[in-house]
Length: 419
Image 1 (cartoon, rainbow, N blue to C red):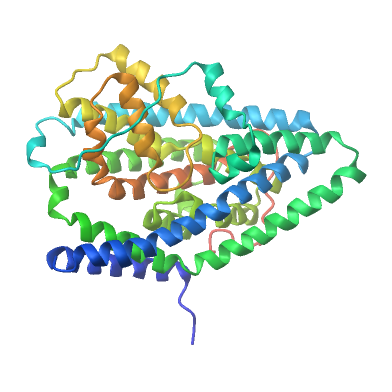
Image 2 (image 1 turned 180 degrees about the horizontal axis):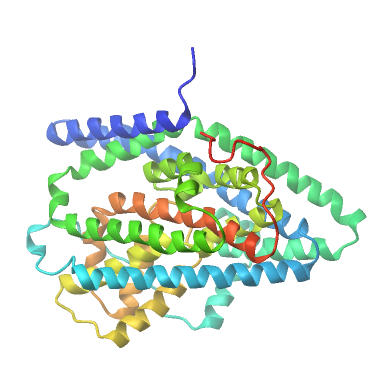
C-alpha cells in the first residue's frame, strides 16, 4: 500500500483539527477539558520537539558554513552582503505593512467594547542603545544561551568558533569540523523522526485554537486579518517576485518547488519546523552548501519578511483602534524601531506578539491592543510564517548570485518536481 505523503498527512491533520475544534466550541460541555488536557498538549509536544532541535542545528550549520567556506575574509564578505540584503528587504516589508494599514484602515470604526479579551500584562524593558543591545547578544555562558534558545547569542558564539577553526591549521581543525558535521547530520535525522509526529501536532494546535476561540469571536477582526494577508500576498508577488526576476529566477517556480515546506509552515506556524528540509532542498536546487549553511540560519534571526509586515499593519491597527493619529515622522521612527526589534526572533509560534509589544511600548501606544490581537494571532501567524520561510528560501539564491557562484543541482532533472 502506497504511503500517504507527509504534506497530505499534515493537511489532513489541519482539517480534522478544525472540525474537532468547531465541534467542541459548539458543544462546550467538555470543551475546556478536551482543549487543555488533550488538544493543546498534542500541539505543544510538537513545538517543544522542534525547539529541541533548532538550536543545535543552527549552531552546527553556522560553524560549518564558516569553517567550510574558505577563509575568514570570504566569510566576512558573504556575511556583510547577507545582512545588507536582510535589512533592506525587511525594511521594505515594514514600509509595505504601514502603507496597507494607512490605506485600508483596518482599525477605523471598530467597536472594541464588543470584543471580549482577557487582560494581560506584558513586561517590556526600556528602550536600549545600540551598544547595550550588542552587549546583551554576547553570552555569559553559551550553554545557558542554548538552553534559553537565545538565537543571536548562539549565532555569535558559533561565528567566533567557526572563524577560530578557519584560523587553525587544517590538521587541527579537520577533526572538530568532522565531529560538527556528524552532529549536524544526526540532528537532521532526529528532525525526520519529529516530522513523523507533525500531523498529530498540527491537529492538536489547530483543534485547540478553534475549540477555544471559535469563529464568531473572530468576526470583528476579520478586516485586520484580510489586510495582513493582502499585504503578505502583495509582498510575495511584487517584492520577492521582483527580486527573483533580478536574479533570473521565477517566484512561482520556487513556490511550487518549496510547496511542501510552505504548507507545513502555514499549518504549524513554526518556521523552525521546516528549516532542515528547506536547507536540504536548497542544496538539491544547486545552492552551494557553504552559502546554505550560513544564510539560512542567519536568515531565521534577521530575515523575517512576514513578521515585519505584521508589525507594520498591527501597530497602525492599534493606533486606529484607539483613535491615535500617528504623523509621518512618527511612522518613520516606527520603521527604524521595528527593523531593530524584529532581529533575533526565534522561528517558533508567537514571537511576533512579543516584538509587537516592544514596538507599541516604544511608540507610547496602548499595550491592551496586544491582548486584542492575541486572540486572532494564530490565524495571522500562519501567513506571516509562510512568508518568512519563502523569504529565507529566496535569500540564499540572492547571495549565490551576488557572490558570483553558479547553481549546480544535486538531482538533475528533478528541480521543481520534488514533492
